[in-house]
Image (cartoon, rainbow, N blue to C red; front, top):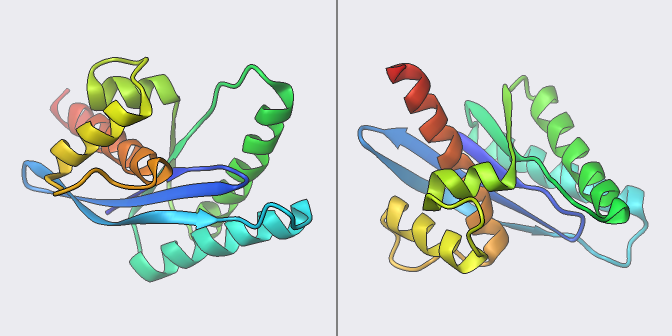
Length: 159
């Protein structure tokens, strides 16, 4: 099972995908909603505790994390801090971590690296055979990261 994560300081999305047979399956997905008015160290602890809890509950074999490309320095630092505690939670659980750029994830899921969030949500729905597109968008993004890793693994096995 692969845990995909879309890190953020206010919302961190997670999605668990099981790759069995030809079609990946969504096992669980959701978001960690972080209290925006709390001091930064407490917000980072919330992210860490939340991801560590998902790992403990679901026991994934691998973790795939969305890396980031942000033009705004302040946003890059904020996302980097959230990403760092996600990486720490995975490392403390002894799990291998794989990182993917947003355009790379979109390319694998929608065949276009500049896709909009709505397109990603719909393709995640189709690829996982879900009745409805995953909500919120951060959860769909996390599932997309997990799917991207599934496809990367499959290509590596075939290549």
